[in-house]
Image (cartoon, rainbow, N blue to C red):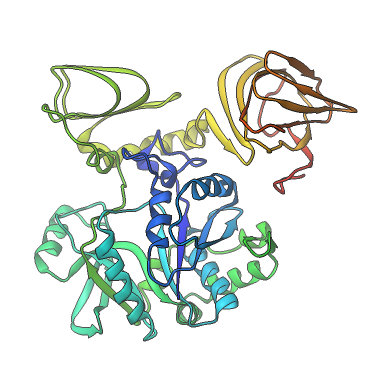
Length: 477
């Protein structure tokens, strides 16, 4: 059997403002309507021998991940398990936790296929064949990487150099890993013929990987083992929620730095699979067909004498007049305008937002929660207005706020409301008032979405002014 491990996280800072820390790159919808995470799940579930898929993700992203998986058509009805991180500790920790989990449940010879959730692979038949070859090499105790055959000198990817003098069955032994090079070096690598893009995908047996971690990164392995031993299993072992205090002590390091650059048991499978990490808006724009003037447009766009631009504006009308070679990405609360040659520099804007504490690097105006979503419509001094959508059968926690009162007006659906000692049902065009300090709960007992408008008033309106007493999703204080 093959056990795909999907690593779902990261901020995707070069795809800001669409990608945020609370809604990162794997969840971005591509022009064909699917997101990268959904594509990764479907690709993994189609592989021969796959009966179970393990996803490692941040616990704050679990419910949107579960929603995407539920909506996807899982062709083999694979069992879906999760490891939930309280905070990101990089790829070495995530992959090590998955290896220990699989070794415990399926033995040291369990073959893992590690897949980043934010990569695009367009040739799935070639990918399946590369995976088959990789799994055969993994049975020899080697750690296998997928080396993508370069199509052009790329400075945004790391490279793998294969050792011409040493080969493995179905693959080649890795000589070294190389960080993102300058253009001159990238040109030399492409011409050499034994250099490949480092895709960040791996295949190995759980026991072989753990053995190499014990030799080359024992501090990471021991810290992860300690965290796992104190972690909680939920929902019949479907979810393993990692202990926050112990997980915070795990070293924050990538798998390449921790292990792959040091191990002598690393092989690579050269492959041509239509791979892209969708690492910038230039890569995203390549997925959109150009018009007769070279513009690649998604959304309601008007164009006059503009050429060779990419515009993503799904929510409102955008007009271009006499401009060229621009990237324009419009969201409800942020607008990016950049020259196409500077797509990689968007990450510097995110750095400025982090430094200033601006929340647009963290979340969108629409925020996903286990029970549904809320959208901030307007806010000002002592007030905030939200649109809240609660899924059928879902419920917010029994909670209380110290500093704000809330007015709820039902737009559609049925609301079941607890307000201190009282309980009521409200239909469309009915409302209620929740005073600060009152315990309250909102529930949707119906079979359609509950939509309501919430008006908050108070001297502090931060999302951290909340005390949870009971919660279906394990978030109680």
